Length: 347
Ligand SMILES: [Zn+2]
Image (cartoon, rainbow, N blue to C red; front, side, top):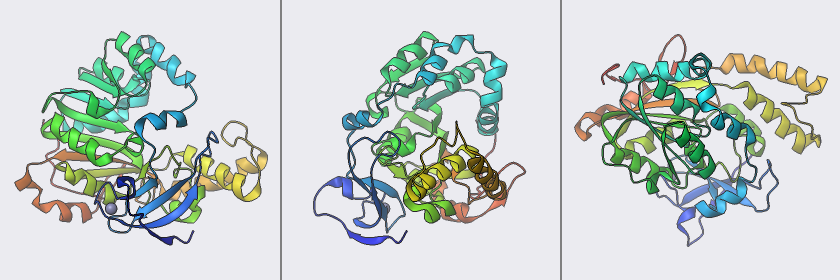
C-alpha cells in the first residue's frame, strides 16, 4: 500500500483528527464493508500529525446500527445463561484479566464499557467487585440486569454516572468502535477517582501486517472500526484524560491470522470459503505457517493486539510521562513497552 496525499476537505469535523484536531491526513485506502457487504464507501485516513487511523466520513451513532445487522445469537445465549455459568468456567476465561487488574487495585467499583454478553462483569461481581456496565445493545442490557448487574443502555456519555464514581474502567475491543475516543476518555476522566485504573484492549496498527496487508488487514474493518491505534497514539489519547500508560501487554490471536489469510485470499485470489470454520487443506497449511510467524511475534510490540493498563495521575505527577512511555522492560508473560513507576497494588 502506498498511501497517497489526501488534502482534508474544507468542511466537516469528521475529517479532522479526533485526537490532535489536525487536518493533515494521508489516505490509506477507500473501502467498504467486507463482513456483511453493506452499501457505503469510506476512506481510511491516517493523521500525519499523531498517527491516529480513522474512517471518513464517519457514520453517526444512529447510522452505525445499520452496520451491525446480525443479532448475535451466540452472545445472546451467553447473556441469557449468565447465572448458569460456573465460577470455574468464567475463571478460565477471565482469570488472566482479573489477575492483571489485581496487581493494581483491590476490589472496588468497576465499569465495563461495551460489555457484550456481560460475562466479564458477572465474573468480577462474583469476585467481590461492585460492577456496572454500559452497552448500546438494549436486549443485552435487559438480560444482564436480570443477572443482578447495574447496566445502562446507550453510549457512555448518556449514562449519567457520578463524578469520581469508579476505581477501574475496562474496554475490551470497544474503543475502536466509539464515535469520539477523545470524548470517551474525557468522560472516563470525569467518572473516575484519583489513581483509577483504565484497561483497554484494542488492535495495534503498528503491527507489520497492517503495512504489509493494507486494505486486506482484517482489523481495518471499515466502517465498524472507526479508529485504529498504535501504542503512541493511544498513550497520547489517554494523556488527554489524565491517564499515564503503565504497561502494554501484547498478543497475537490465532483468529487474527486466520482472518488475515481469508481476506487476502478473497481479494487477491478470488476464493471465498470460511477459513475459520471450514478450512481447506491449503488453508490449514497456510494457517500453520502463519502460526510460526505468530509464535515469533506473540507478546512483542509487533503483535496486532494490545492491552494497555493506564493509571490516572494528578497533573504534577504526570511530568515523566514521555520518558515512561519510551522506556521498555519485559516480564515473563508480556512485553511491556511503556514502563513507569506505577505503585503496583496501590488501591
Ligand atoms: Zn491527529
